[in-house]
Amino acid sequence: MAELFNFTKAKLTKIKGKNPTEKNTIPVTDLFNEMTFRSFFDKYINDYAKHTINNWKYAISAMDRQVEHFYDIKMSNITRDVIQEAFNKITVQIGEHTANRFVRSMDSIFNKAIEWGWEGKNPASRIKKHKVKLRDRYLLSEEIPRFFKALEEEKNELIKDFILMTLYTGARKSNVLSMAWNNISFEDKAWYIANAKNPLADEAMEILERRKKETTGEWVFPSKNSQTGHLLEPKKVWDRILQRADIKDFRIHDLRRTMSSWITRTGTIQCWWRIQA
Image (tube, helix red, strand yellow):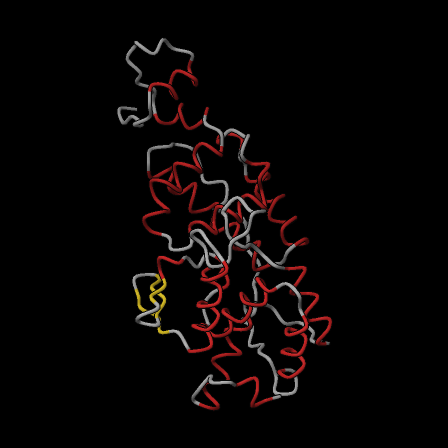
C-alpha cells in the first residue's frame, strides 16, 4: 500500500527490528497486524474518541473491566470467535445491555482501523446483539419512602452523594461518575457537559458545595481504586441499598425515569422525597 501510518521511529523499530536511523515506511496493514490491541486502542482514544465521544473515559474503564485480556493480543488475532466469547461472558456476568455496548465499541474500534487504512475485516460486524426491550421502570410511590430510608442508612457517603446526584440531574450514570469540577459553575448553578449548559437543582448544588469542601483533585466523585481516578460501578453498595429497601428489578439508570416521572406529575423536584415520605 502507498498509504503509511504516521508512527514514531521507536515504535516502528520495535515492530520490525530496524535500525532507528533507517527510513521507516511500513505498510499500514503490516503495522496493524503486528500491533497489540492495547496499542491501537490507545491510538483510537487519543486520535478519535477524545475528540468525538463525550464519555470516552468511561469507554476506557469499561474496556479495562470487561476485556483487559484483549490488550496483549495482536490486532490480527482478534477474531469473531474471540469477540463472541467475550460477548457471551459479559452477557452472563453483567447483562445484555452491557454486552451490546461492548460489541458496539469493538465495532467502532475496528471500523476506525479500516478507515485508517487497515485491510483486515471487522470481526465485530457480524456479532448478533441481543434484542433488548426498552425499560419503563421507575420508583413507584410506595417504594420512594423505603428507598430514601435505605439510602439514608447507607454509611458510604461518596456513593450516597453519587446516587442522589444521578437522581437530581437525570443524567446518564457514566456522565455522573466522571463529573469533573471544571465543568461545574457554582455561580451559574450549572453543569456544562456535551457542549450544553445543564441547570442544577438546589439539592444538587447542596451536594456539590459539601463535596467541594471535602475533596481535592479533578473529580467530584474520586476513587483511589480506579485507573480513571473517579468512582466506577458501585454495584455492591447499590445492591445493599435495594436489599434494605426491599425493592426488586431497579437499576441506577432507572433513576433517570424516576426523576422525569416525578417532574411530570408535580412540575418540580423540590424536596420530593419528603413529600412522599
